[in-house]
Image (cartoon, rainbow, N blue to C red; front, side, top):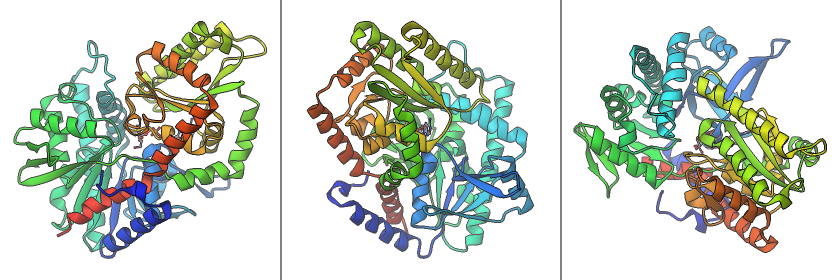
Length: 511
Ligand code: ADQ
């Protein structure tokens, strides 16, 4: 993180400081963002009218905030058939998209279906996501048979297509661009792109998910992991959410990348005449826009609707249905809470707002089934005709999620491991009941929020059940104190500061 102290400045002053920097930095430079999933995807209504919908996921909402200050080009994969149609009707053309909050010019990278599926459904998820969340059951999987090597070629082809689209865009901008790459889908992009860029362009890459240590990266065959590491070292800056991930990355390069010279105190990797800066930028939320959603009429309607579904006290979780989010162990902890403290029976309800995710991948389909079975089991064990201990609401609706966050008494965020976890930051900002945050030590956010939250091990269901009880019986005074602590930490470093810190480091690299 940058050494400046954002906490000491008011929100308004910090926004002004970011605007000034962006104006300065982009007066003669363009900003190009690239990620697999873009900020918007298009569908058509029955009458044939284009209907944009905002992309989902934490990364998109966080990075979208930058568009307030610069009018970036966002290069991404088409997500819907209408996106594909638009891209092939006007190849290489930028598609303008703006709302009250956001303003982008979009460019879709179209690749053949087979390559894209290999890139997305085999390599990005599950292979890389599972490695970076320690999720492989190593006795059995993964196996690198010829199918996996073919999939790797698909990953290479899509990364190559991204690099070419970015290089073409940089050339047509006619100035020295700043290119900001996002996440694990594009690990091979910098290696292809860097030699295609003019020398005064700057290239940075942010990894939104955890970075495990070298032993776990050894799951990948030598050729694959060396290609990823060598490519990442072609960036000017590589960003992670926490110090732990930065140290793991440095250790991984030292152990597994031939020719890499690692300097731990400067946090750099030198290789092939290039110096990579590895930096910590903890992501946050756009506090102002989350509050605006909380005040909207739609959220008020959802709030009224949810009020009828609450228990006397309500534990909330809001997640994508991803095995890394540890939803089933959350249910086990609830089960144990009822066994140990039966006084909560009939009074405490778990409201689980869950979005099915990556259903093209078998492990995710299986996990969805496990979540449903665990819900039914708890409702059969403890429920009756009048009352169910678990209310599962499946589907993505951000206003509904924010409405639920206003109403919780306890927010359970217990991922096995999670880059940051934005729900842990959204909840305390909009909650109206001085609700208690329970956070897993595996979530990046626990390193910032630990002081105001109850921190648990994601594997320890006994500790989690005890934390649930402690939160449910906590005195109003302590709840209020903890809420104030959490709010002040979150407000003291919002998504604007995440962007600001990265742009300061980039501006210092200008020649
Ligand atoms: P995600 O794994 O997608 O992000 P997270 O950071 O929690 O996880 O962001 C999810 C976003 O989707 C939040 O804004 C949340 O409110 C919303 N959401 C989740 N479930 C929802 C539901 N049921 N209905 C509506 N909205 C829902 C990845 C990394 C994280 C990292 C972010 C940003 O895995 O660790 O914090 O990127 O870097």
